[in-house]
Image (cartoon, rainbow, N blue to C red; front, top):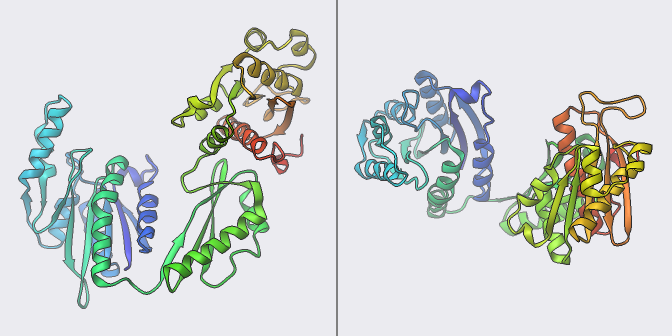
Amino acid sequence: MKAEILTIGDELLRGEIVDSNKAFLAERLLRLEVETRFQTSVCDEPADMRDAFLRARGRAELVLVSGGLGPTRDDLTFEVLAQTFGRELVLHEPSLAAIRAFFARVGREMAENNAKQALLPAGSEVLENPVGTAPGCLLEVPAAEGAGSVLFFCMPGVPRELMKMMDEQVLPRVAARLAAAGRPAGAVRAVLLRTFGLGESNLDQELRDVARDEGVVLGFRTAFPDNYLRPVARGATPEEAEARLAKVCDAIRERLGVLVYGTGDETMEQVVGALLAARGLRLATAESCTGGLVGARVTAVPGSSRYYQGGVVAYSNDAKQALLDVPGDLLARHGAVSAEVARAMAEGARRRFGAELAVSTTGISGPDGGTPEKPVGLVYVGFASPAGSAAYELLFPLDRERHRALTTQVALDCVRRFLLGEEPVATRWSAKR
């Protein structure tokens, strides 16, 4: 089954928002062994939308449409879809009642233009939207040439609404169609491997002889500060595809080792939290240049109270002394951005919170504040455990936002590596240690 994803909205083409819906929809289709062959974005212009619908009908059997289902004058998806394929718009009374009930639940008066969302192409099947006002629809139209038909699934552009509708309304219908027609020959399996500590080009070099077998493809994607690997395996049967995927994943993990930290949706903070919980250890944080970002990410994970004791954001020298017991003479001799102070911050946090482990950050994120001896981008990550403390010197010549993000990831990775019994910091990050 050839699939196309079509996203609609001026904001997409103007670059006002990142079109994350395409990636989500393509990933979900792959779970049904349906590969996306085309992805298109068009503005809220009826002529362009009509052209996109006709092109999709001519080259795909399944079309997922996102956006243009709202109540405003530029939300035209149902109207243009109906006109393109010679259908009338008809009022779907149950959808209108659901829209009115939605506004009643949230205690708001419904503007009359919201009723427009209940006007659907004649002959379409309604897709319920339990978390928003815009219903979706499935419209089946004749294929452009030859026998058969094309399925158009229209969904809201709001990611939260689209995701729920895709999982609960669209995927079961697609799966039922595939089952009724008999599974197409062949199977596809894929997984996302998250890596941290090595650049994209170096990853490719490290894996130059991996994933070269027939039926296996390895993709690379940067998602700062991480790099993602996407091995895709094809086989005559699901079992064959799964075996090929397992083989290539084993080879990647053997080659990269601890650089691979997670799979799928796993984040660094989730992996660290799971390791801490499994070992019954508690963590504290002490932050200067990252301003609380490490603690924020740790506590973003549900259940983090099991292992996270607390943190201190000590930006000034006075705060470092008062809250983390960093000696004043240490600050005077070495400066706030130093290995000695990073170690003292981690040790102080560990004592203050009664935690087994503590991690600290202190650095110069810029754009100013650097000196020839301590340039912008210099950062120290401190770590303390019952066995003692250490600090790691790194140099990241990046803009302020990315410097803080990368430092935060290094701090979390330092905890992960300690818990795995590995070298605390990826040595290839910087020549400075």
